[in-house]
Image 1 (cartoon, each protein chain N blue to C red):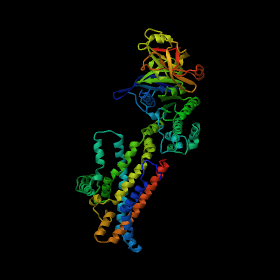
Image 2: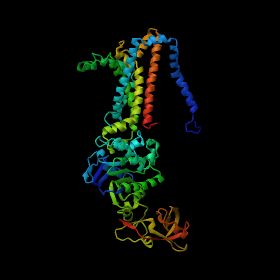
Image 3: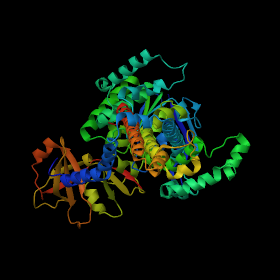
Image 4: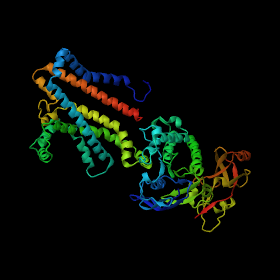
Length: 347
Length: 275
């Protein structure tokens, strides 16, 4: 089911949570609503679900206006941040709930419900837990049960609020992969909310970046990473070095290969992997000094200090593959030259 | 018992608990049991199968159960309103709930008797409009017991409703449940154990209640005479054996009923995964 939001606004008292949100999500996408906390992403998700009413604007699902329709009639599946499993029901009954509350003429017979619930539990690989209670499950298991419960009613849209937020890192990694695969399998239009840009980039086919109740950019993960629409998106997605032409030594930047493409461009954002490091001999007049480095697995992150700068100037971060770093055989305090391959310019 | 827990003192506190329960609960109650040994089994049977005694048992337990049921219903609504909604004067209502706890029960009894007697303000109204007389009938006893037992229900249900995760309701609704289904299948089962606790407290209080009841009950033998009153009457006539026999019986029945309620509660909790 496609989703269309037009002109959605929402106020909480004097605080404007969302202002004039226009968003179109084609059928079958797996979309991430990404933004810092308090940016309105959860509110937007709840408005799509019907758990919250927008002050202005309309919500269309498959072209049908559902703005005022009650959440129970919208045919959406919602997975809550803290799962919201029914504590007094077994895992089986939790998943069966949506099937049991259907009006009598639509309700499946008991045998079919049983079969379907077991099939769903197998889909989330937790059928062996069917007679447990939610309190007896781990966080990752609860999350998957919550998903199975939402899927039981065959929703046309699946909405997930910070689905991995409360899980530890390794479980989160597994579940991300698993959610992607599940989406491939079911192909139901899904939206999930996250504040973790890595998670959004890894899982989603489309990313919507929100800030202060507005959409900053919408696009595929590579779009957003390679062509950030503005300074906020560039800063929020991935690591970025920020060079302000007004504050920093323009000559120094020119030596590093950074030239403004347009006159009004004043601030350059440079990804760490777009900085190439070369070792220079000690007596040479080098632009930077290696202060420290961190091991990130396949990559090494180098922290560089501009020579001749005072202590307040922010360090420059560069990244290079492990192998390359070994070949350079750098040690702390070595002078280096740096070459900036490309930058994003903002005003 | 782990020695390195943060709060030590298991031995001290268990010692205190045992001594306290012995002095305050077990010794007085066992005295009652020993007292009753003076009676032969036939004497005992003779006393408690007396028609007046039996009907007082009936009055006491039936009014206590009915009152606890009604109080559970209304107490639940009151707790719901106090937790769920914001309105003018909420804090005042909050304070009002505990009032029956603080009020001397005799005062409550006199007030209730005054307004519900056939010539009283509400009593007259009820007789004139629907022809029901409250005072001097079992209905009056129920009335008094509801009055004193509502706080038990409200104060046991309230914290559970407060802690109830609203997202469970939202989850239910998002799965297509109607409001009634959300209440019946999600909210109520979660609150039920607490409601049962409140019911047990209200019932126990109701069975033993004396002060607030005797004024409104009229204390007509076979109609509206409660067990505690009968015990006092017997004591006033220096019929200690009779009083003991009735008291013991009451103790046993109360114990059994509370045992049944607690078992039910255990079963409910177990069934709903709270144990």
